[in-house]
Image 1 (cartoon, one colour):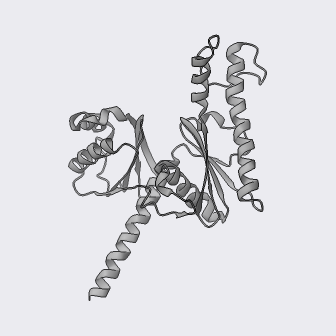
Image 2 (cartoon, rainbow, N blue to C red; image 1 turned 135 degrees about the horizontal axis):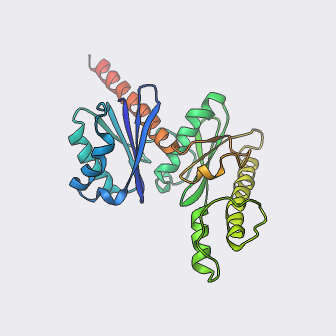
Image 3 (cartoon, rainbow, N blue to C red; image 1 turned 45 degrees about the horizontal axis):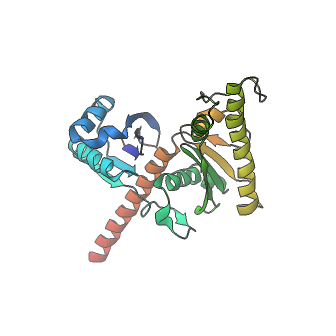
Length: 273
């Protein structure tokens, strides 16, 4: 196995196994709360990682420092020869046009990097990444790979929960599309408003971003995040749906960081010879 990529979020940690050549061959999620103790962490990952070839590199991105510390210790014990790279906002190899990059979530930068490297750079086109998670985020990347920033709005699931919580006569609902945009029951009406309304938000906001940031070109729009599956086949605005975009970003960042480190070592040795 070439690389084990780990994305640790507040709710869950996602681990992805990549073969040489960058193909994602396996992924699994574990609750972040299981990473509170070394024994629990080992129990959580022992099964999914049993029998795999030891990865050459382990790359970890995290928004939960205590969880990454525990996981790094366990993975170091399991794969003693693997190089470990901690990917953060300060070492992600992406150009920035953003006043305070330390404020940015690592997942936003990694998604932007992956979208650009996978689609934007080969086609020399700008990208807009739409991440459908707890929040819905929009991020813009120019055709030369510069991260510009974007926008953050409440996520689809959050909207449904807020309606059920704050409106006494509205129930909790399943996030599923109703048969028609015109709801014939309260539940269908809520589903229509949240999901069809959410798609309309994506379509309208992507167009607003395009007009402002890329008025003379058509950006590649990439959707990711746990709720991106809901919009498959529902809109022509989105060019690609890649739920594992952040894992891809971790892989790409680790490869670029490793290559840069190797170049620095070679350069140092040449200077010293």
